[in-house]
Image (cartoon, rainbow, N blue to C red; front, side, top):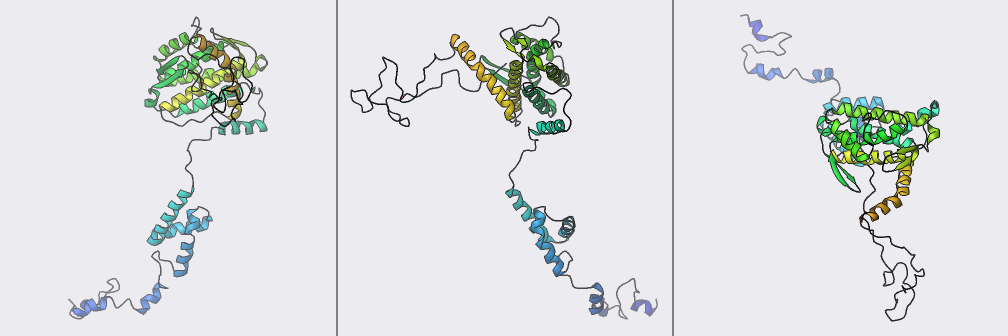
Length: 377
């Protein structure tokens, strides 16, 4: 082997050897990185990310606005290119992002329940509907659409979840398909009044209870897609037909046990749809908001008009307390019921002020059987 080969490894070797390959070889290996090498490498890097002092400080000053997501696109790109190469800046960026997260209230991922109404209103302002939707049909239209949106996200296991339904006369547990069958069977009475086909077919029972039993029994032979599709199609047909017959808001709907005009029947069905949708949401532990205010007002008005009739029926059945006469504090009482003395003596004195609970003031107690919100079939 030639001595020249022992002394130089050549340009590719990157080191120089002594004549014998002895101690000089190790000491001279790192001598090449002298001042000349530093000049070739450029300015000395100051940050962990390979940026100069000025660049590093500039990028670090942007971390706050970057965490708030208010950087320009160019600044965002520069910061995000710097963070993987600079551990201190990356840690600071993580802490800032966590702090920003604490500044924002957690919000539901579900869309605003009024989103559909706002979109439709915007569309209708641009191009009015050929057949406008009457105001008395809107609550039923909105509540059936909201329930349909809830059902869209249901998994197979959730369709089999037990749903507890409560009425004034008792309660019952059905599957989700059973609840839809119940709603569809009662809605079918409105459909037949409008001239549509009965979902239970010709010769079906007419009472609410019998129709529910028949529908629940039949739905066991079909899967969730069939039951949901049949219910959804019927609700759309009811809305469309009612809109075309807007001048017939007083059309009588026969529920066998009672009769109601069409506009009240649809308000009642909208209320039932909302209540049972809440029952479904509670069964699967899913949040469900209230109806739109203008729709809720119509439903509450319908229930309030029914209240005297419902309370009277419960009293006749022995399920509610007898009527009580309410008098304003300080008003004269009926003969035979003198006011209790205010000073504890034997003379009848004036009533105590309305804020006191003296012997002359009676507390009003909710009659039994009226607790909780009203329920409809």
